[in-house]
Length: 523
Image: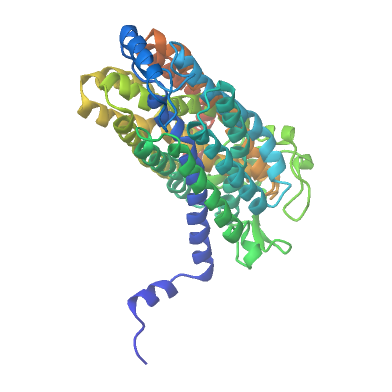
């Protein structure tokens, strides 16, 4: 018999389950990358919506000349300071209002999205959200082609887009949580969460390509891409391994039982150290522990098992140990990240005196650093088995790095490149870890007794609270930046410090558990 070709041997070396998991990993990666791809254009186009004006005398003479000549096919925008109504002296506040309207709608919608999402099929829910997001993203760009200069048109497009984009995160995290167990979750989700940065980078490059010639296409093209990915989602997304008769990833705990209804191995509650004379599994210890025995158990009122039909309540999800602390921490971490997302290109334009296209291209380095930061955070947290401590360490380093960025970026382009990479890693690392591995840990916490339907609600609560910070950050940047960019960076450093303070209790418990575990082994 002839030897199989190398390519076929490679394909057959993986099991059917592994191929399905790789497919879902890649598909959900691309789906959420397209969401972020559609969020990025507004930050790139800001430099085109408002330009540095000529002197008022020159402007008046140009208006007189324009009034005398015949109108051309391209609509004449009366001001040469940009696109009306963003050509006024209060343009930073108006641009900040666009960010704020999107992010406020996103924050409010996220709390509802998780509750709705766990009661509907993920494939239908996500598909509908992506099609609607494509429509409203393109709608913003159509304002260019139809010569719309009404501020409320753009604000309503942002509000509508913010609401429908909340369908994305709870859906993809629930799906990926169904397919991947706790083993090496930090690293796997650290790599997977790079879709955020990949989407930002692609969105920046696509928007920057047209920003100087036809900024409407900077929104229309991403809108079409998101809608097409919605069709792909409808055709190919598989919500749970049982839907294709795949086995779930076994739990790391040795105490498991086979759940016949779901064909999944569900982790049994572990007895505390006083009852069985030995410490708990380290994976159950490393997150959200009780001061006495590193174990917290909620009553069964939070929800039934996976075999049940009950979805967890909002208050029930809040009772899960650590949800409140990580949610508030994410509020400040996301405040910093989204301030960079929406204002970095304009900052680079002002400091480096680059045009909108080059500033947009340069801003992608922040997201490149974010990719490495997310992967590094996941890898470290898996190795140390300490999620909160990993976040705290990166937050501690991020604050002085932001100060260095504000000072060094004025020294030249080379220094800006280096600081963008470092800042991106330290700012996005904790944000990525909390929204992925931590959310999945909490959504599958042992106190839920296998109720996998809680994952969508827990994810929505954490990301929804973080989105409040995401709304506040760009708004505060718009209000503070007229007094100087240094003040914006001071605000970001304070936010990082607050995020760190909110994690101190969990960090202390992690360190105490580690000390107790070490002491037990010594005896």
